[in-house]
Image (cartoon, rainbow over the protein chains, first blue to last red):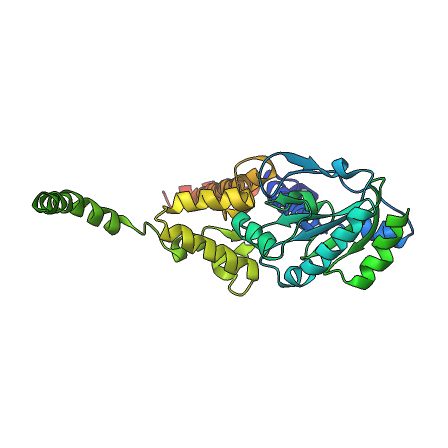
Length: 185
Length: 156
């Protein structure tokens, strides 16, 4: 039988509490670093969740821009980095679609993250990208979108709601299926 | 021409040692010295351990450029922080939840010391108790009388 008096004596009690505290701390660390997949779950359930709000500096420098500044436009938010191979492959497609989206009241919005700024600007010049670019240096803003891989893209409708997500590079079929119908709306 | 040559010679005499001193002080640090104190933010491990990750390779190239431009380790770490935020530093900042990284080990060490001290004191006290000779049990009435009689008989 458990000796209650012995267990409740100060030393075992303190040791027990310390173990519980350390386990709780580890659990919090694990849970808080877990990528959120709530956007994908809601979209899979047929909903359009509101896009998490953020404000970031322009990659080229200067003022801050928020996602709300693009309200009224169809936005394909593309999270990328200059060191990411698949980002290089999808960039020409994104530029082509940006030109098409502008005519239909939309835009591609690049969010460069965890990147050396100079490398990112070189990337933009190399691929002649003309769409607006923001810089999320530590990835805090895009974490709300559950981004863990690069590239990832989010289709945001004119009311600021997420219509589709792509965890990986987009292709023409994805753009035709998820972006083109919104441009007509 | 002669005057120009003299001026150039004087400039070499004055500037030479200074140039050599700068050259001797540069580079001020090395990639190896920096990469074990910073993180690869995408990989979530120290940069020294992230050998193949593309982001780590870019970060390393950035550090090498900074080393070549004669920046110190602290300056390079500041540059990395400006590029990638606080998370790039292997030691987290002492604010917010990150304070736990400093407080928890300190608390664990203090709690451990307190526990060891308590155990040692308890054992020492128990040892002292065991070393003290116990008082002999008093004899019951008949035995005491018999003992007294024996002591008198043998004249002790």
